Length: 308
Ligand SMILES: *[C@@H]1O[C@H](CO)[C@@H](O)[C@H](O)[C@H]1NC(C)=O
Ligand SMILES: *[C@@H]1O[C@H](CO)[C@@H](O)[C@H](O)[C@H]1NC(C)=O
Image 1 (cartoon, rainbow, N blue to C red):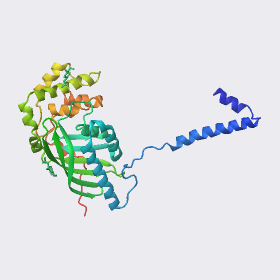
Image 2 (cartoon, protein in one colour):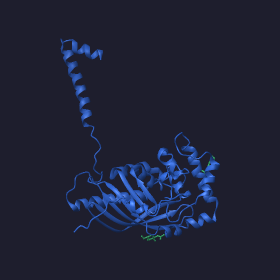
Image 3 (tube, protein in one colour):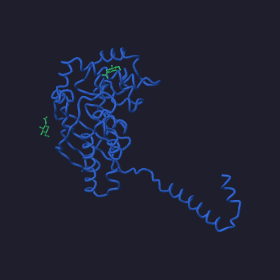
Image 4 (cartoon, protein in one colour):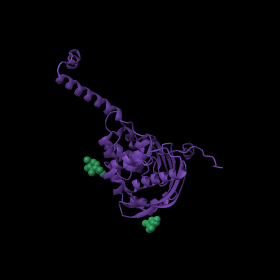
């Protein structure tokens, strides 16, 4: 500062000094230039970064978005989770709502990360089922909605069994061509769990549910014991509580069950302030038994009208 004042006070006498000032001016103006070129992130989708007026162009954009979404789910693994999240962040609204019936509802980008992490599990307990690939069965798009039916092939990591899970997917886009909400229905979910022989395995081999309970309790002890986070007093009280609730609810994943807490235990390392309560005794409003009617009062889509 002192240096600058001296420069300003002293009139330039030599050509050297003039050159010096010219250089100083150049440096200052380039700093300003750099500041001016830092643009805020575009609100538009990375896949369709412009305002689109033609319906057919919009349909192409929607198709690419759905393909990217489903390819991401099929390929997500712990090793590429960060890259996948980057991809999702570029195509969804930050306040996206994803309802996956009867698995649960995921609100915001963090929760979409959770939905994907179910299958990737970077730090938490190894997950039981993993998506392998999918086949597109039906697809149609009409702005701002795109609908697809996909058959996702899943593998049961414990016994190697594979089974297809049909997902009816409805996507609603915002004005920036990003996915604002997604409403998915799994019409064959209960039979799918039977086909993977998940429930029979768990009842035949008590060591599997025991080790799952231990994983959840270990995750709670490791990541949720800071002040202000919901957690269990110790391993014994955690294991005791988890033995007192159903292991799984064959009708729903988001329920007051051990399986729901296993899903969320995958995420406590990533965002303890959000997820510790989900694996805790209260279920944090997520691993809870919702009333039947809740589905009808919390739709991610606004009511529609007929087109003509
Ligand atoms: C899954 O569905 C595909 C067709 O979409 C079929 O070819 C495949 O055999 C099915 N796999 C199983 C394990 O049922
Ligand atoms: C839980 O932690 C204990 C103590 O560190 C360890 O012995 C046990 O293997 C862990 N269990 C699981 C399933 O992670």
